[in-house]
Length: 300
Image (cartoon, rainbow, N blue to C red; front, side):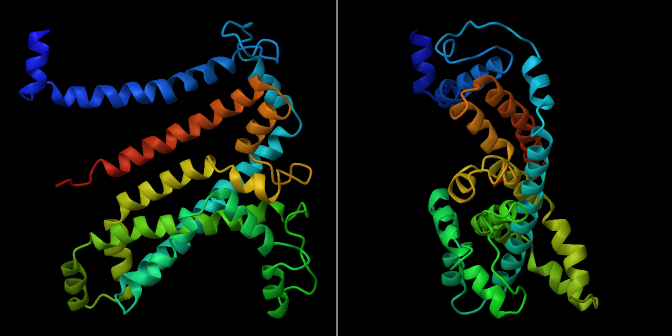
């Protein structure tokens, strides 16, 4: 005991102590629920057995039954469309804004700060705001599209099966664009300006400098942004609850909202846990991409 205490006071073992407590905290609050969720996906769970840990083991039957359900294919397709469209929209707009603010001009820092409003707002508040914007009768979006001559009649974004998913995608792009902009701005600021000056002296135009210098130097940042965007998008739940509630007729339902609906509305906890485990695989893949994209960063 004396040796352990002396190692804490003279510096040896102190770094291990700093790591042990956070790891124990994460294991208790995140690791145990995760293990419990994975085990539940292989068990038969109902309202009567929910309070017990030992339940009938059914193997992969929950997964088989899940993929036999007729709505599964459509919901998984909605999830793919939602993830790809959201990440692409957030990245492209965020990258464009990062390049725009990269050019220093008066008031740039203040204007950049205004874009952070969307990121700090709670998801339910964002959903309420976009409910007004997407309203079929008095929504601002319909007014702008009609005045621009793009549409001739109102679009009921939230209740039309053809547009309900895209209504949530628009809101999610608005919500996550500022986060992409900030991370990409940090990556742009790390590129040495000497490279651009040298390439400009060699006669390279703007597009050549962007393709040969900016994008290669931003590779790790872009990988981190896309992987984090995948994780955050797969976790997005508030917007669906606030805007479409997964409807109409599952036209805007995605895996994360379906897992909640199965667990806490239909009380099919095993199926909800099964969907969560499937999503966990994609989140882990995104985490691997994130780690691989940032491991070459130089830390001072």
